[in-house]
Image (tube, rainbow, N blue to C red):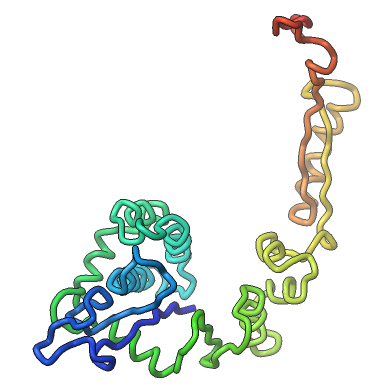
Length: 265
């Protein structure tokens, strides 16, 4: 997996003047080199803000995802940022630092990466943003969100289900991850299947035992002996213990003045 960020080439669209100043005001960084413009986000978020956050997330990916192609920390940061740093909080340092902390991101590493790549001030080339402009041109992305699998653009819906099934279809026959075989076409629901690692209840039994934590001729052997059976069943069975209590209000153990009528019960 590799995330890419959709930006505009400010030089190509005329956002940098002949004397190398930014003609597009709050839409760009680097004196008009890297820009973003969309009328859908509202007045509290500028194109400059979007470019800056794009670079931040690119750097998070560089440090926490590029090596393994999975990037759990990147996913965690993006999810927290998208849910909490909305509208007026989009460029708020406190919100961003909170997202860093929640995801386990080293803010010093990311801030250094943003500067080392060329930064966002002045008529300076940022090599990470240049790579995104190049990738955008090569892929011919026009609509967002856009998904590529093995270099081919996914057409039609980009729902999680469609993308997941497209990825699974991209493997050579017999080389798919096990989760593809379990969850593609699962009627139980893709999200439930992926989370549980199985499709529905067909391959796993769910059982529970109601008990009272008191020794008895029936309860004690059941709990002591069945431990081995529960372990043997492993992930193919899901166990939940329940505890039997009485509703004191229903059986009259609380008086009108809210005192306990049943003493030690």
